[in-house]
Structures are given as structure tokens and as C-alpha cells.
Length: 320
Image (cartoon, rainbow, N blue to C red; front, side, top):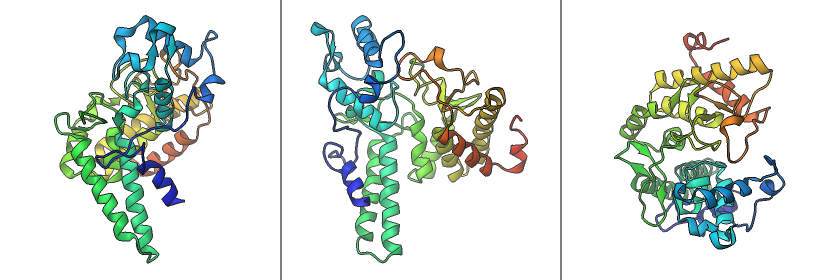
């Protein structure tokens, strides 16, 4: 199972000549969850995107509009659906991270995916060692090669952040995103790189925790929204490199927000407006999913993990 799953991400079209991988879904056409999913005023997400392409072409960023939109027929192109499916493969659905509506996903080398693959390679090497299997060295070589490639391609010394890079030019996308904390969480970052990322924490920090990005786009995986997994990745990554005060601060902020909204609504939500410190998000989500699903597994798990890591003195600061 490890080998087959690993092969999915490390063969074409996911694998790239630079030794890193990208998101690239293998399906075609509209994603079923969009076609059968929620509608607003009778319009699906695809309807709203098509209208935006037609009416606001000057606002498209990150890829050529003609690649994704056939203006002569007022239609989304096959390339659009490949990009849209690949964005959903990334889990970030949608944002402007990979260009408008995230449909430029195949054009970029993502920080998060490659950090996770490095963890997989490192963990598999350790499994090989513990079980006295023959391929430990091969897996360690893969991890070392990926770490070098991440340093060479995805570390942006100019901004002091890890940044997604263009597949063709390897230029960094100027779009600060919370996935910059993945190399700290995984342990890939050097002490100097971690220090730069920690110095830039202020770009993402809000009264209710970590914003997903620094851009307000009307999409749920951007500002002002915060998602539990990124709170955990950021806090654990900062702690790994000794930035405990910063990790405590963002943990207290998010824990307090979740608890505040639980006391008001008696439920836990999938996402929050971390600037307004509110679970009411629909008015600011214009593309994708404006509902705020209750439950919610990753928020529950993140809350307990952040709480467990807090010193007793910091727990007292959580608004209860």
C-alpha cells in the first residue's frame, strides 16, 4: 500500500523533473460534488466562475484566461476542469493560491505536498529500519533528495517564506500561504529558515488564530478565514524550533475562538473568520462553499491537541 500510494505522487503527471511533485487529478470534466452540490440562487460554483471570467477578465491572476475560458462560446474549457479537479485533490477548494479559483493548480509546485512526501519517505525509511527490511537506504536517499529540492526550489529567501513555485520557470508565487509552516512542522527547515518564517508570523496572525493566506478573495481558503489543520501545523512547527511563545499565542487565540462560538451555538465548526472572531462566514464566501459545516472532526482534534500542548499558565488565558 505504501509503495502504490507513493507511486501515485511520484510518477507522471504528478512528478516533475526537479525532483518534486504537484497536484494533477487524472479525471476529466466537472467534479461530481460541484454538479450535485449546493447552489446559490440556482447557480453552481461553475456557473459563478464562468460569469466572473466573462464579466471580470482583467481580475484573473496566475494563468492565461484563454486556457480556462472559451469566450466565444462562454464556456469553461477542459483545462479548467483538470485544474479544478487538481485543486480539489489539494484539499484547498478554492482559494487564489494557484491563481484565480485555484484552477492553476497543475502550474505550481506546492510546498505542502512535497513536505508531506518527505515525511512519507522518512517514515518509510524508519519502518524499513525497524523491520530490518532491505530498502531503508533507498528511502532515505529519496527523502534527502526531496529535502534538497525543497530547499532549492521552494524556499524563498527574499520573502523569508516557503512558497509554491511555477512548474516552468520555478519562480515563486507571491502569495503568502499558511502552508509555509509545513516545512517547520515536518522538520525540513533549517534553524535559519525557521527563524525567518517565525519572523513573518505577523503576516498570518489574527485575533482568532492563523489566517489561511494574506489575501481576501471571497474564497474560503483565504483571508479572513482560518482552518483548524493550519493552526495545528503552525503551532507544532513553531514549537519544534523553540518558538513556544508564538505557538502559545496562536493556540490561545484559536482555542478561545472555538470555545466562544461553541458556547454561543453549541456546535463546533469546520472554519472560522479569525479576524472577526466569528463562525458566521457565509457573507464573505462568494465562491466555493459558503456553508459552515458543523461537527467537525479536524476542529475537535486540533482543539484537544493544541490544549494538550499548552502550559498550565497559558491555559488560563483561554477565554472560558
